[in-house]
Image (cartoon, rainbow, N blue to C red; front, side):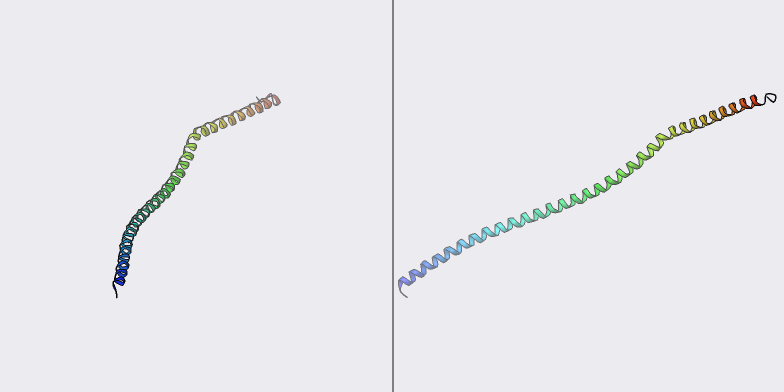
Length: 122
């Protein structure tokens, strides 16, 4: 080998060494980017789990609201019945009084007619 071949080899070796250092630098950058992506992925997983937990909590809240709504409807019905009870009682009393007055009137008319038909008995 002559000196020119050694020079060419040295130049070639220098180029390879330079590429090697460049590639090492690029690999280091890629390793750092991969680490950042993993961290971001962990953060996204935590966020996804948090959203899932919130959704499950909302389902529980919706179920509880439905139960409360049903119980409120039941209470409204009970209150309505209790509110109407005095009115129903008064209506029954007036119906009873009007029935008695009607029968009293009918008995009076019947008595009057009997008194007219049979004047000597009364």
